Structures are given as C-alpha cells and as structure tokens.
Amino acid sequence: MIIHKTFADFVLFLYVHMAHADGEFHSLEKSVVLNKMSKIYPKESNLEQKFNDAVSQYKGIDQSQVTTVIRDTFKHFDQVKFQQKYKVYTDMYDIINADGKIDESETKALYELKQIIEIGTEKA
Image 1 (tube, one colour):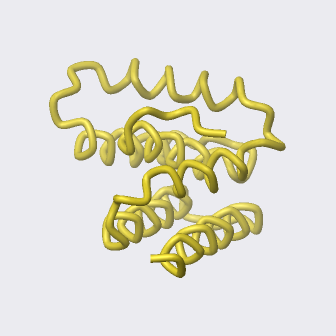
Image 2 (cartoon, helix red, strand yellow):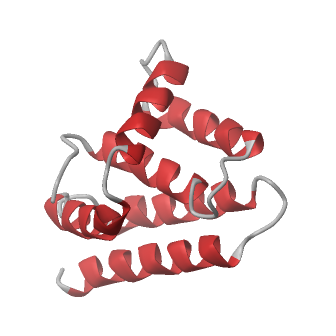
C-alpha cells in the first residue's frame, strides 16, 4: 500500500512513525522532526501545518498496516540511493533519542526500519 507521492512525504511519515513508536510524542521529538523537516522541505513556509497534517494522516491509518505501507513505499522509491535511505535511518535514531531515553518499542521500530532498508538493497 503506497500512500505517498514524494519521497520527502514518505520520510516525514517515517519521522512521525518513529516519534510515535513508544506511544508518546515528546515535545523534544517534535522539535527534532521539525528541524529535520526544514532540510527535506527547504521551500515549505508552514512546517508546523505540514507536520500536523502528517500526524493526522499517520493516525488515520490502521496501525496494523503501517509496516506494509513502509515496506511497499520503500520498494516504490527504489531509485532512491542507499545513502539517502541510510540517512533517513540515522535521522530515526536522532528522533527516538531526542527525549533522552530509548524505549524498547522504539528500538523495535528502528530495527524493523533497518531490516526494510537492507531488504531493499539486497535486490539492487
């Protein structure tokens, strides 16, 4: 299931996913996400609104389908280089570490993302 038209929108979805991995959305995680958004959306004038829209979209998806969305979308954006995908992975670590603690659910979500990225590179 692919719900994103651009890789930047997909990356934002991943940021939101990671920030929600522990069931909480800490203000420091939001701050990190907004900072990273300024790099993936350099011409966006209202990052806060874009962020809120992404959170609404994320919450509107059946949570049992999130892994499918992530896996299918990584396959869809197969032209994106591994280095860029790996940068997204390292950004995820920054997000889960923003509040000063890494929960087991966050570790699991990060591991799953790493597996999906590696799966994509095996076929290249």
